[in-house]
Length: 234
Ligand code: ADP
Ligand code: ADP
Image (cartoon, rainbow, N blue to C red):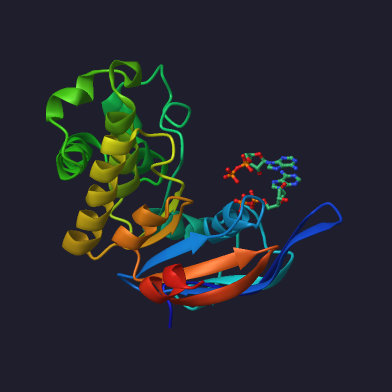
């Protein structure tokens, strides 16, 4: 039984079909790359895996059971376990909130911890992404892109999820910072057994982190296998 699975999923925007019978499994500790040209449907797959939209056909399974977006208890457990990391750490962090509020938000909204326990977990999360706890009383605009992406990743891990779904997590960053954030994702996976699904057009980033890679074209999976083999294909 997989942690997260897309089973023959279809999706369309209006009458326009953008995913056609896509199947994808994510097991504990997996690192899966999702690559393909712009418009192939990568972001749409992540939206389905994040429970942000219902598949039009087929299904999304979480721990082997269908994900029911209207089942609040299930979705609360799901959101604690499956967390997103977005491309742009400038627009994904609310500039009016202090970093401690931003990082602690999942604990509050998912009712996982409050008070001292929440403060301790927020502190642990920022430390685990390589930031000094001093950042907690500051605001997002005081930080560089790479530090902001670390803050976003701290928020993503504070609920102690089992999988991170990352959509172009390093594309908005400069080259040096990219390497650091990629190393961080690889380390979180190694140390916490976190599974990763990463959409990226940066193939060196995919090669550095992902054991398995899925290639998407026009809404279909056209290739899947060990990253080394898939990325070296002619
Ligand atoms: P990728 O992430 O691989 O670039 P997307 O999943 O973003 O692909 O998009 C797949 C297709 O769906 C593209 O043709 C895109 O233009 C279209 N699309 C994405 N979002 C919307 C939307 N909200 N409304 C209409 N079409 C969309
Ligand atoms: P990505 O780089 O992740 O593929 P895009 O730049 O394609 O993202 O899309 C950014 C946002 O615009 C997404 O939320 C996507 O759903 C939406 N979008 C993409 N294509 C269309 C479209 N043809 N019509 C409406 N919204 C779209």
